[in-house]
Length: 132
Image 1 (tube, rainbow, N blue to C red):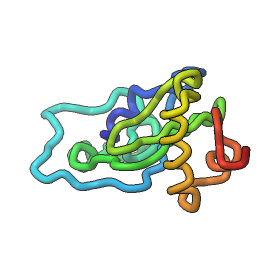
Image 2 (image 1 turned 90 degrees about the vertical axis):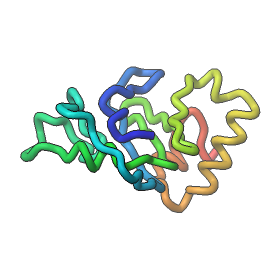
Image 3 (image 1 turned 60 degrees about the vertical axis):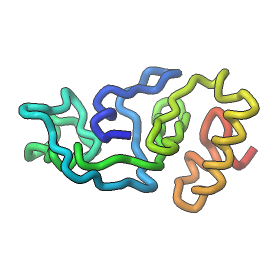
């Protein structure tokens, strides 16, 4: 997942923006540059801050040269978590996430990274967590 997506992603359930990003692994892309004049509109995912709150211009080239391989998008409003698996953010509504095959994959992801993730996700996260 590209960091710059944080400028447009919102919780599919409550529409909260921005989501909290927890990066578990990333990779560096070589030979990738930001397009001339590109800049996120409101929020810098790499700096995890609104552009208006930054004291200096963000390094868009650094942003474009990184790819999030695994991580979690967390909604601080409704407590839902969404995994990033194989560079793809899985922002699905609860009804779809409850389907057997999807829930199985997401719970396996949660178990794999339980030691790296905060309790608000592993023990309290919605629509499911490791506590219940």
